[in-house]
Image 1: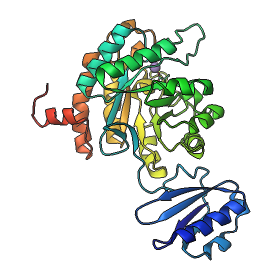
Image 2: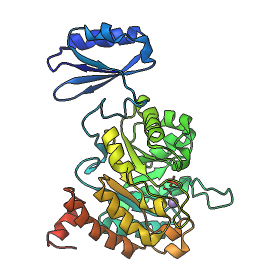
Image 3: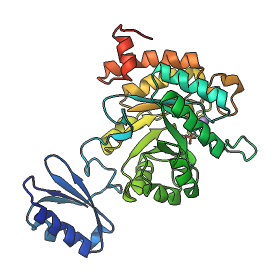
Image 4: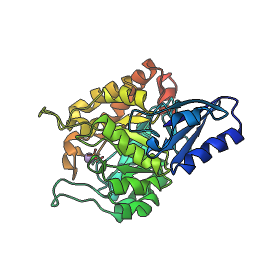
Length: 352
Ligand code: PEP
Ligand code: MN
């Protein structure tokens, strides 16, 4: 249920409405905009009578929410959520934010080289898995804590922010100590105890779409994190499983504008896992930005043929640099910007 207050509603009006909702054993989440306050009611709304709320002073409208997600919905929060990752890095604003790096952190030399190269090409966040969710228990599982330490070192060296996956609730504190964004992988999108625990964390979350999840299931997963009190959720379309076999997954481009309509949360695209094919990554990246994506998550490796995971979909450092140049043009054509140094280079300034 969503309760919209009148622009002139007072704090006393607000308090009375909140009191009424809480008396019924339901919880409230407030969204205070510049014009008006919107109250999201969480819990079994059948316990509340619409008319008894509508007559309260300061109340303009009360709506039952037909969609099962509330806090993630545009109705609850009409303005876009901008997730602040670190100084100067915000996802969901006008600037397209690119996160790039290896599938897995493998060794210090490769990670430092990759960090410096993707930074020079215009990425703002370094990705790299330390805890890897592998389909086979015999595949490389990641370096664990040593991988996290290397990511922190790469952050110090390059100034990039860090995104890395957290696999289990017990690792949230550990990973939060090293990472600026907590990634929830496709395989864990409906790991509800992980989502609940992340709801209590005070770190931005990158929530990947499950490989067979509908858009509604994906937004319900976001709802878990929001209901736990963590409002800093970035959605990530990473392709869904279809009957097609030439690609690893099928990127659901339509989900990008759809999620933007349904939700206030920012959405980025992962063209690497979406296709599984290096030669398709650039085209899908451009398509995603043209469709309204707020950013990209791209796998990049200094020597893709030697990568311990996902080499077939990883771009070389040079291929990534070419992608970033192309992206600037697409971003501009849809009224978006890219990293400031790239913008300068595009305007004919010193490309560095
Ligand atoms: C990854 O980002 O390396 C990854 C494992 O992605 P996904 O969860 O989308 O498969
Ligand atoms: Mn990967």
